Image (spheres, rainbow, N blue to C red):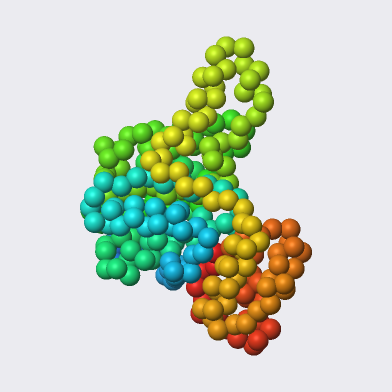
Length: 285
């Protein structure tokens, strides 16, 4: 009668380790932070945004002062000069996100080594880990957070972000700056309940405003009047060779209860569809 050889402890451990390696997914390849125009951070890893096609800077209409300030700051960062963190705030659809993308795209077209990292997570405490990863490159980087806001209490995320902003270059390096968009000027909501605190109510308000104060530039985007809205439609229509009736553009906005760059773009999409045309895939306003 034959007997099976007795497996040693060392052999068993090696066999188990090999089995676990087969079950575990391979580690993602490290992303080259020098090779692409835009990336995304999901809270754990950086990935490449394969198609980064922001709107043409020249197409931004009705926000001349805001886009010029954003572009100049982005150029300074790309050139290795001192630059600000920027808060872009205001009504929805008024071009905040489009301005960020357009300015980054314009600087890249000028041949300057600027990259964008979009933060696709609500866990802002993960930014500390992201800054550590970005320390591996000296390439100028704009960290972009879209629709930043905090409901209810200030929260750990808000405090973490404020701490990182306050830390400046010592925390994240002078080559990384934060651009954030928000529907609120002071990011966090204000309410009359702040006045109900019987002890130092001013301190409560100051604490809530302290986060927005950390941004060196605060650019306001406001609701459009009718002429500005029609001018945006006209700029898009001219770019794509489309004819339009201003009255129809106004009716389109009236039906949606909003005049904005986003609504103007949607009307142009409608015009192109009616004409049997395709657009070139640029990001909308």
